[in-house]
Length: 374
Image (cartoon, rainbow, N blue to C red; front, side, top):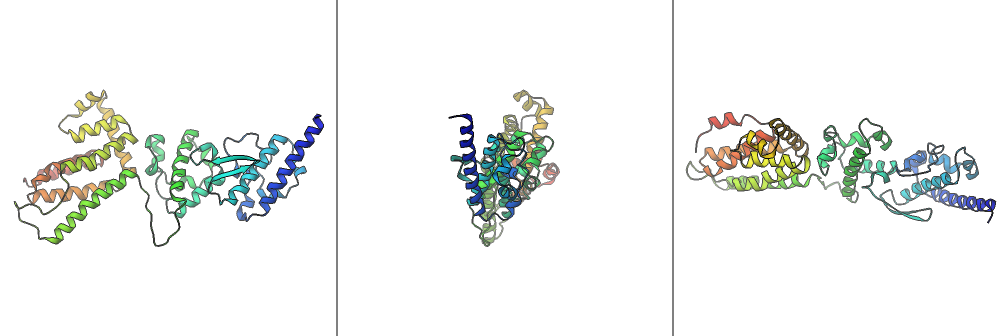
């Protein structure tokens, strides 16, 4: 086959594919998507994009004859093929309501992965934002839902989701200190939340709360003993001193297993092994000095204090209600000890140390000095 005839075949194939996807688009209810630029459906890994055409709206491209598009300076067969690919994405995304899945573009099977940053188009990012806003998640902080806070810099921990959802991916990538690694972490967090929520039906009488797993476990633990205390106090009058407290508060073993150990494990995930080891030494073995803790881990005292401060900041992001929960527990334990429940002295001490170390609560020393001895 001569070069001329080969070119005719290529052109005929491109014309056929363009007309097919054009007819498909004209048969869909695209609404506001007609005014979106072609770049809206581009992905970071796309090659040979027709840069002279990607700023044109979908409507403009579809209404332009193929021969006129083909005569655009700098647009050859490879870029025309990419143009058809973008039109195919627009058609397939609207046909499947933009929820991802498997589509066919130019006869090739492609799967859209929400955890692959390079495969996320502006169209898909916009869909995620719309979904998360409809669930009321736009005011949540980014750090609250990160798999690990070590994946994102501290300046992003307290960023609201809407701080990013209100921007396009191109605008996010143009932000200072937002390279591909940080953008990939952002996409992983937002895409993960979308996966969780996209199939939840809209039911006005039902509310779904999304929170970190360890927070859900801690909240369940606090709710369980709070309910037990409330029920027990309603069932019987408070006994006198020396007769027991009538409460079912957590003992030291329960505090260590259900509260301290989850906090230590979360510190390992978000800050690192040294942070977890420091908490283990300072909370589970509080008789050791800070200098001893630093020596055991091969760290300076200043580095130990830095890691404790970073862990406290991480927990404040992960579990905003944590300080209030521990203050309530400390109050209940202190009251029980004052009423003669000496079995709660150890758990009270443990909670006070945790508050002072991780939740920036220092008045416990003065309170301990004025509390009645059991």
